Length: 180
Ligand SMILES: O=P(O)(O)OC[C@H]1O[C@H](OP(=O)(O)OP(=O)(O)O)[C@H](O)[C@@H]1O
Ligand SMILES: Nc1ncnc2[nH]cnc12
Image 1 (cartoon, protein in one colour):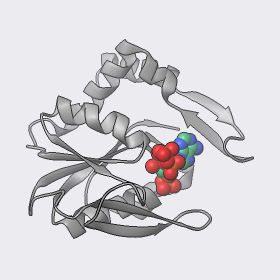
Image 2 (cartoon, protein in one colour):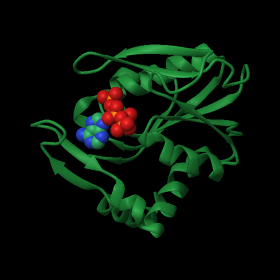
Image 3 (cartoon, helix red, strand yellow):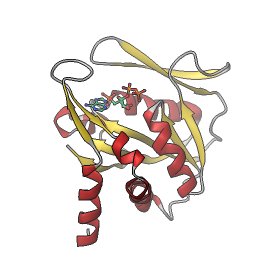
Image 4 (cartoon, protein in one colour):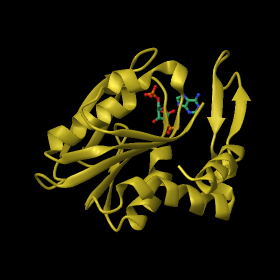
């Protein structure tokens, strides 16, 4: 990493607000909306997210509802790829494929159109935050069900203490721009 890269990442960190005890006591919520609202920071963020995946012939970027859509659509344009939304239940018309996953309390579900990816389509997953990793691992299972060829996953922020990377494992690269 060059000195310029380090300075750029430090500037991006400043666009992320820590909100203690939201949405529940004990959680420090990482709010990325100040970064999004700053046009230079948003542009630098998308460029930094795209950089390691350039030249890998990414054909589809799958973004996870809802904050993953914001970064995913911009990243897909940057990589000249299509964008595929992975949605929470009840939003997409049938036929869909779906994967259930465990949250800290209870379960949730991700769905995609059943023909959202072509067999073997070169696919990148994107989300804003990696916490426990449950959401990203469910998204990976969905890409597998759709027949996509997963190149890896990219997140803006990784919350190291929650060890989502352990859950993801080593089968495909997982890249994070910033760590908290
Ligand atoms: O690693 P995990 O523990 O699974 O948590 C990470 C997920 O949590 C947040 O989504 P949330 O479900 O809050 O939805 P939102 O994007 O609609 O706010 C975040 O955007 C990730 O998708
Ligand atoms: N602490 C956190 N901040 C922002 N998004 C999250 N998603 C899961 N945990 C989060």
